[in-house]
Structures are given as structure tokens and as C-alpha cells.
Image (cartoon, rainbow, N blue to C red):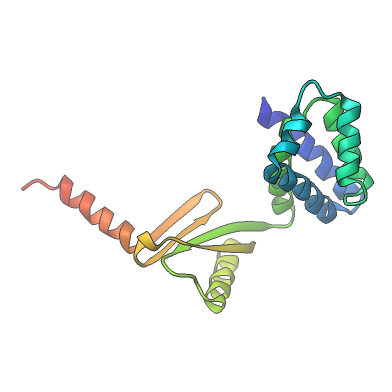
Length: 180
């Protein structure tokens, strides 16, 4: 139910953004609102509290986000408050990002390495992935020293493990499965 609600609201905001040619702006704004909720737990509690009236919540939203987000996004937040869907704002933001990436042909990729990748290596990887997948790649490099060497590539719903640790675990599994 929650995912369906989030998807419907995200889709409504996304389609409005497309119609008004403001989809990039709406993405930034709904992400900013979501980030505030993730970082400010007290603000989130107030916004989700059932005993605070809709009008008070709208006034709070206007005070916090008025002038920082467009009238359309502020009005969207008011609709969310009117429908008592405040607890879904973060999920709405996530699904909006998904729709945005689909529209802009963007794929998010994460590469996990034992040491940080230099910029030229990241650029070569992005270029290669972009050609392979025919998408614009947004690449994030994270470091996990436990993998010893090599890399783990996570893109869409795929994980490619090319690490020394992964190879050692595979060998161990094969050895345990052998009969002597």
C-alpha cells in the first residue's frame, strides 16, 4: 500500500514537472525536502504527528520551505498534508528520482574497491559502461578494504564481483564441495 501511494504521488509530481518543463527543478526541490526530513528527526516527528492540525503543518512547511521551493512543490506538499500522506515524502522523493533517471536515460552504478579509484579510472569505467548499456552513467566509488583487491560493480539490479575476496570464497566453496 505504501509503495503504491508513494508511486502515485511521485508520478503526479513528475508528470506536472514534465508539463511545466520543470522536472529538473522539482527533482532538486523534492530531494531537498526529503533530505531535511532525513536529517532533522524532530521536524519529521512534528510533520507526522497526528495531533498537529493540517493548517499548522502547512504553516510549518511554508515557514521552512517558502521561498526555497517553487509554489508548485509547496502546493504539492500541502496536498500531501491534506491527504495525510506526510510519512511518504521520502519514498515519494525516491520514486521521483527513479522516474527522472528513466526519463533522462541515467543508470546509477556503484563500484566498491579496496582503495579509492582515481578520477581517470572512474571516467574510463563510466565511458565503458555507458557504451555497453547505452545509458548515461552516474558512478559512485566506495571503499571497502576487506575485499583485498579488484572491484564489485553494482548497477541496476546486477552485481558483478571481481574481487580477490570473492574469488577466494568461490574457491573455498568449490573445495568444500569436493569429495576426496
